[in-house]
Picture 1 (cartoon, rainbow, N blue to C red):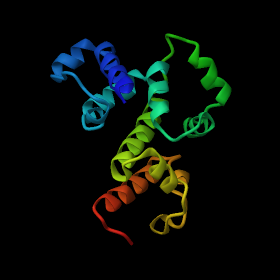
Picture 2: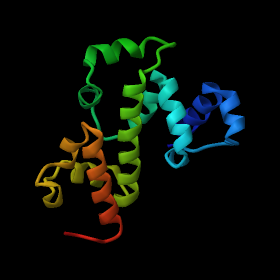
Picture 3: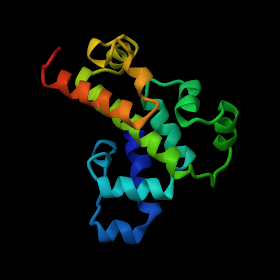
Length: 159
């Protein structure tokens, strides 16, 4: 987790020093990043670097094939970007990366482990129409349904 915290901190410093001082953003952690919606909007518009994406990818239960599918790009394209130090993801891809990172971050808080969260993601869920939560993560409406269900689980509300 410290590697992704350092990567987020470094990224926020370079995306826009003026935005950082204007918004009074000090040191920021991975979890705090999701609470600052203006920073998220700014980040989406600037685009994630591949190195930050790879740190986030390590924290998620998703494979490279899953990521390629969620981002609607080929696995080969993802691999090609890995070797480009100046590569920035397009805003649409950056937004999807942030959405999946946010779901994973909250899921790990709710379940206290990546393994338990991954098991839940891959188990059909009655309140989600007996679909696996993972199947709903391809679009933002599905992501919101998954986040809502995680919130209910976090508050002990089981349907």
